[in-house]
Amino acid sequence: MSTYQLILASASPRRRELLDQIGLSYQIRPADIDETPRPDEPPQDYVTRLAREKAQAARAETRESLPILGADTAVVLDGEVLGKPRHETEGLNHLRRISGKRHEVLSAVCLNLTDPPRILEALNISRVHFRQLTEDEIIAYWRSGEPRDKAGAYAIQGQGAIFAERLEGSFSGVMGLPLYETAGLLRKAGIQVL
Image 1 (cartoon, one colour):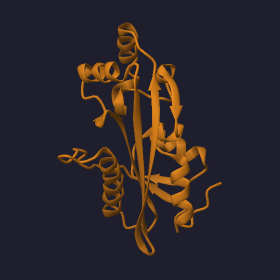
Image 2 (tube, one colour; image 1 turned 60 degrees about the vertical axis):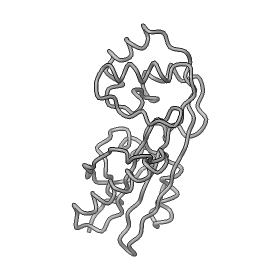
Image 3 (tube, helix red, strand yellow; image 1 turned 135 degrees about the vertical axis):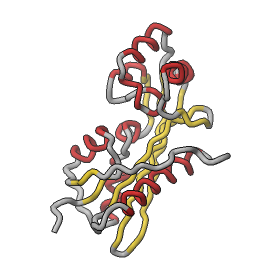
Image 4 (cartoon, one colour; image 1 turned 30 degrees about the vertical axis):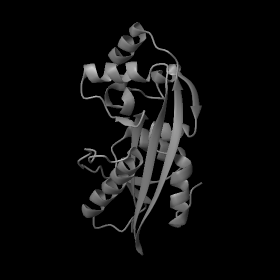
């Protein structure tokens, strides 16, 4: 019998940190899926689909009946998803685009359950207001290495916090796993949180 409460379908150290914060025990089973947006797919549908597909991919790779938690986060500016930067030019461009503007961070969570088989999903939408950044700040931040594997090219829990003038919504959601929504799904599945 497993001592774990769930399987996390992610290798994200931020998601692990957040699950640790609320005292959950879990296995890590990263899911490798195609994260290409579909033509004309709205950002809310996109991020929810990816969370679901991650949980489903992890389910297909295990014989265990533990609940599987999938999650995905997207930074959205004017209806466009700003993903993880593929290279320096794109990363600098993301930062220039969100400078001095408000953008949304969408974080979807999906719980894949086996007894009875069902899928539970939730979506958190937060709004982050960035102050105007100087070109020197943008370049220095990129060179720090922090934004390279982050949606929208910044980390709210790291050095990128100095750019966020205001946040409306979930800090943990902007980090990558909205704890309020996650705890709600876990309670529905009968998993004790705290």
